[in-house]
Length: 84
Image 1: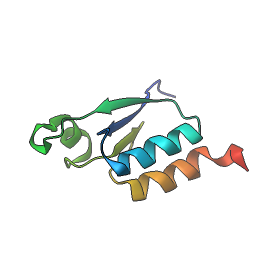
Image 2: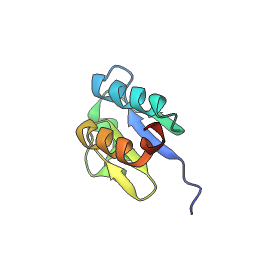
Image 3: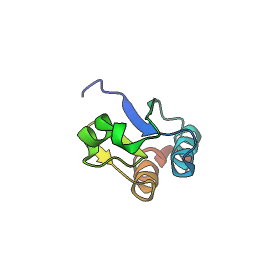
């Protein structure tokens, strides 16, 4: 298995990003927080990994999710198993 760290591309002021950060904390998932520029035209790295410039974007190995409505269920499926 690869040693790739999960990455969250996000903006501190983004309420959707905050929901993802909170869920990652609740699940005690280790990740790298990558703050992106407020100006979408400067988000080249986000576009390179996800095909679009909006955040949040979560990269977990080969899995790339580009919306909190996809990210939160994914985190629950993959990481919440031990909470039950």
